[in-house]
Image (cartoon, rainbow, N blue to C red):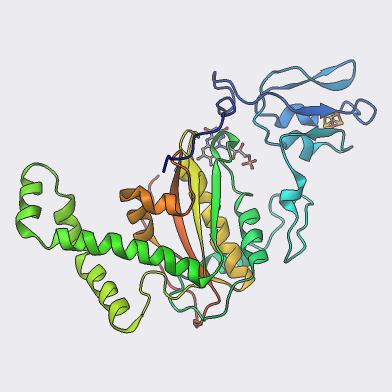
Length: 319
Ligand SMILES: Cc1cc2nc3c(=O)[nH]c(=O)nc-3n(C[C@H](O)[C@H](O)[C@H](O)COP(=O)(O)O)c2cc1C
Ligand code: SF4
């Protein structure tokens, strides 16, 4: 089967003041509404707007489509057609689209949420409503992205059967990898010719993988996805300016929002590792070759509670 062909791409976007071209401007300004306050000029990262005859006008030919001008305008005179307000409409809760000024939030409550998120390894068998998964994606995309590329994509595994299907493929990959890693002569030869990866894998992961494979084979226990009833693969288009960062920032949002919604989550690094090394697993999910998965999230209703947040190790801080 041929990998999907990459669709025509928009012009590369760039950080403010960088020489690279960005998207064509889709901003429209209603002169009847504009009062010429100039607020939109101050927040535009691309210097796309100007004031002429007391009204804001589009002068530049580049836009990041960030909607900063639309969000700052006191008279709703600006429409940035690159953005879609429906992306901020949620099915399971009502979101407040008023801007929260700096300092107007309970820091302690925010930190409590962040610190209470735990990697969940005990999920109940209860399925997760698709609406929750779709809402999580929309929370994810409120994250910043390099050059506002928003290159992320989200592949949902909405039920346990889909999670198990992916788990079987990943299990096959690691079974083969462990069979290779068992060959000490192979590890030594590869190490000797400057490829120590299999030896490192053997020392760091072989035993854990072997235990997981045995648990699954002997009594059906799922040590990979921990019995999650849903999952999500967060990928990003490779030619974005910061694809990995963008995908992981969206992922961070999703983990926090899931906790707030009552869902448990766990990032599954073993799944990412398998996808990196065996592209057929990525294709199985319909993810095209011009995207790279950066996070696999196990999701479900948690069957565990804690008494307090978990402490962290001492941190290094430099000035
Ligand atoms: C990985 C990453 C790198 C970024 N680098 C820059 C940068 O070098 N200069 C800059 O002005 N903004 C930078 N940004 C900010 C993005 O341009 C910004 O997040 C995006 O335009 C969306 O706007 P928002 O953060 O207000 O939602 C970066 C963002 C991310 C996530
Ligand atoms: S922020 Fe709105 S009202 Fe003010 S100059 Fe820009 S378009 Fe006009």
